[in-house]
Length: 424
Image 1 (cartoon, rainbow, N blue to C red):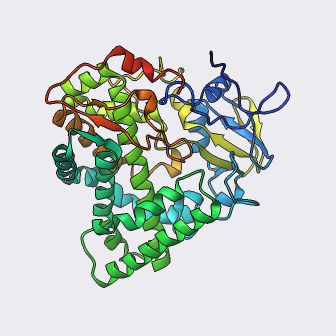
Image 2 (tube, rainbow, N blue to C red):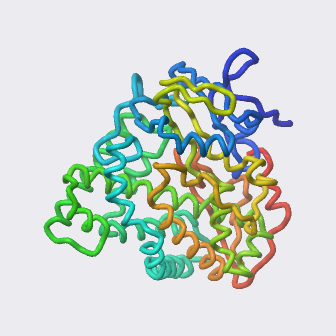
Image 3 (cartoon, one colour):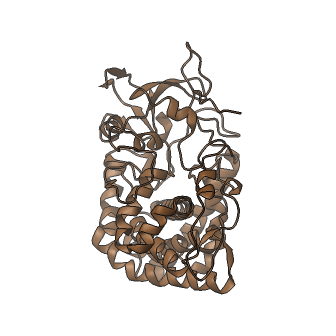
């Protein structure tokens, strides 16, 4: 049976809703319905509560709007593109310390305090520690092998260890916050469950803040206790960094490995030349775009791409579509680790560009080559179509990635790679 991509919920007279269905086709590609809507830079879109806003799929328009001070990130001004189970009514304002949902000048105050903690130079100094933690995870995986769930054994522990290291969180406490993070990012979770998980995460961070004030250690959270931030603000910022720094990188490592195993020519190129790692990471970030979409609201009328976005209208910026814009990235649906993929929007753009992007880059630049070097015969342990994906999570990736390995590299068959493009 052939699959005909259609715009979700659209007719000739009705604006579409946001296409999110990835159940068919290649698991690394945007939903087919979204691709079908990418023939215009932006278009009208219907939101879950009936609001009529906009969908942006063009790379240049996305960058322009993300950098525009007339565009707001405040949660309470937004309309949600998809219904959230148990959620009714307006979106509440950002909780204390959640800088993602703030505008200047509040956002600027927090950002200035934090940006100095995430410099490229400081993150690169962490590379040696990333190498140590990565090697420890690979040692444990090898000893327990020759099969493993790569998500559980590698993709999740590496960033979890590093974010704990950065914030000064005892790694023994990881089980306490892992479940809360998973619930927060689960689109299928009830709004009440999400709220409870966030409350528990903040409770933990509050306890940690008090401990750092009493006995500072060499970590980011201890550094911030010398600022004018309140305990509540510190707990909120710590919770946000913990959740965001863990889930995004974990899914990039899992989905990135899946993509490399499904593209053996790219995997072989990276294994043969680890110096390609930085370029490969940028290309994987572009190609996979695990964090999507970005929501904004117009504070005043904005004319862009021949259209006028009216004040109060919500804009959904599809990072997936923008990063597959052929006008910016030729042959965008092909994974090419030799490509110069700078300028992608995987970390956003403008005043809200991801603070932790340099740490994520260091982690991935170390982790991918180390994994491939340790296991030259690494391959999927199940057919690609049987890999379970996090279809309902805010951050996309594999729920589990069964792998196996031998002592020497073995070619991946063309059928294994092609299977990723069959209906799933």
